[in-house]
Length: 343
Ligand SMILES: Nc1nc2c(ncn2[C@@H]2O[C@H](COP(=O)(O)OP(=O)(O)O)[C@@H](O)[C@H]2O)c(=O)[nH]1
Ligand SMILES: [Mg+2]
Image 1 (tube, rainbow, N blue to C red):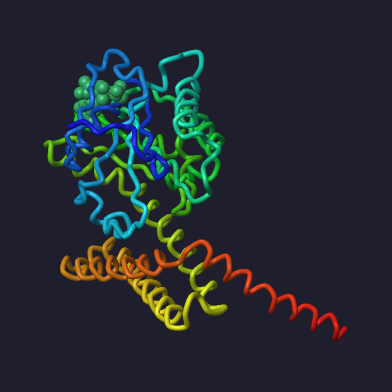
Image 2 (tube, rainbow, N blue to C red):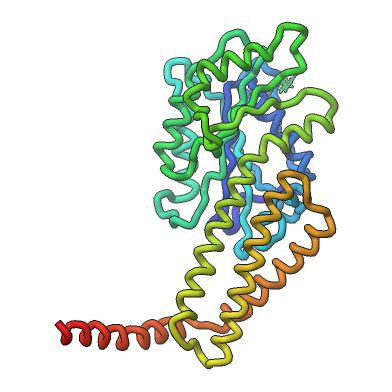
């Protein structure tokens, strides 16, 4: 079954997979797709030429829940407006030897054309992350990645913090005592140093393990990890903002009836409490300290609480909110007038 790229694109999150021709982008993607249980096919080249001349978006079926299980926000479907992950296979960065930015510019143009940038809302996380692949068996190290990433960051401000960048070394299976480890260290200290600030907020360097198919699949998922964590954090932020908005609204007075307002408030407070438990559980999961049964229980409570909240949200119309705001204004005005009179 081939998923189509059409459909609701407003919630899409792109994961850009970039690298020189033959660095193993398509190979990595094919392993990643089978790791998440997708039946999508990617054409892997023979390494002699650039076998992905076009930008190739692959929609990840959100029905495949298992792969996002370790990420409580994405995996619980707690996310009230479901996101779609799109893995983007791209042409080699080195296809035009005279212009190291030509592929990056093509990617930028493609994203802007496809997603009508800059109509994006500030809520939208358009680019979930960038995965850069580098063939560690090569002797010549391209020094263009820094400018390429700067070009992408400039085109999509705030969408690509360094922490959303994963620098991956590939083809470790070819290490026959040549010590690729030393090469990797040289990269960290050299060309990649600028991308790796001392803090946790820098880009991550991860090896794409070579081995059995299962090992490679596991490794592919690990490479995605920093990007998924970022997605989780982003969702946590959005939910917090949404909860606060409701709290503010309900805290200032009555919405519909007294009883409705009271119950609505209880639902919001409950969701906020569970939300903070989810955040704590995410940390525990990172440290592998959360039992499966506890996870499932929490996910259930989390889903229930959001469902309840949605029930209240659905009963509130735009006019309710508007009339609420209008009612809130006159007392404010008289308060202002009163303080003016005092002066
Ligand atoms: N040993 C090894 N070979 C790889 C790896 N990744 C890709 N290849 C091979 O390298 C060649 C080019 O890979 P491909 O994924 O088409 O590169 P792309 O141009 O970046 O998409 C293919 O023959 C792959 O089988 C890897 O991690 N290890
Ligand atoms: Mg390819």
